[in-house]
Every structure is written in C-alpha cells, then in structure tokens.
Image 1 (tube, rainbow, N blue to C red):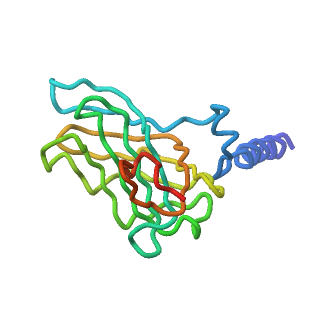
Image 2 (tube, rainbow, N blue to C red):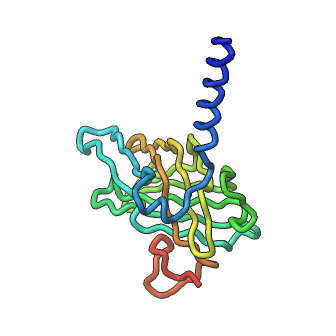
Length: 185
C-alpha cells in the first residue's frame, strides 16, 4: 500500500509540473519580467575585442516579404564596435499560418556585421531553434533557444524571448532602415 501511495504522489507531482508548463507566453507575462529577454553572448576570436553580451535594439516582423508566402524577421543590435554591431534576417513560412509553439523553418537566414568591410563577417547558417512563443494582431514573441552562429569575429549565441512588433509588409521609405521597424503599415 505504501508503494502505491508513493507512485500516486510521484505521478501527481509530475502531472502538476507538466500542466504548469506551456508553449506560449502573453505580452503581459513577457513584460512583467517573468521570462528571460533574448541576449546575445559574444565570444570573440581576437584579443583586440572583448567578450560581451548585447541585445537586439531594432526589431520587426513583417507578415509579407519580397518572397511569396514568406514572412520576414529582421533585427539589429545596438553595438558601437564592429564586432557587436550586427543584424539577423530570417525568411520563414507566413506568420499568419503558424501556430503558437511551432518552430520556425527558415527558407533564408543571414547573420551579418554591417559595419565590416570583409565578406567573412556574414554567415548563412545557425544552430539551435527559434519558435513562436505567442502572437497577436500587432506583435509576435519569438523564443530563441541557444541560436548560435560563427564567423570571423567569433561565436555568437542568442538565447531567450524576443518581443517583436508585427507589421503588414516592409515599404521602403526615405531614410528608413529595415531593422528600425519603420515602414510597416
């Protein structure tokens, strides 16, 4: 009888842990600080630069892109040095057809240092996983699960949740940059 009670207590504890976890978060939960905001850890390959951590400053997701049926995520960091001034661009299946908890399946991925004058400061491959944590009419929350890239400057790992304003489509405006969030409808 004692063994049965121990098993039932174990199942109850396991059930309560599983039932408390969820594949989505709301913007309210996100902004209350209960979730780890995405940061990028930088491990440089040169003694000239120091290891550091930064975050994306300009972020946008566009429902429609220049590729049919594809949405576009674009973000750039707020760095001041060539090795911490980067952008990430991802084309993926339409955000409107994605369900919360689903993993993004990029058709194109780019991580680039736009202040660099060398071509080896751009990569088109990454490790880790990006999933849709939540979405609404004017936002999406992406979960970066140890998304890693490597290039001539070093190794970069983005981990945590990223709140992204959601726009209909990117429209080129005078003086607007894609990662500024400007140009959305």
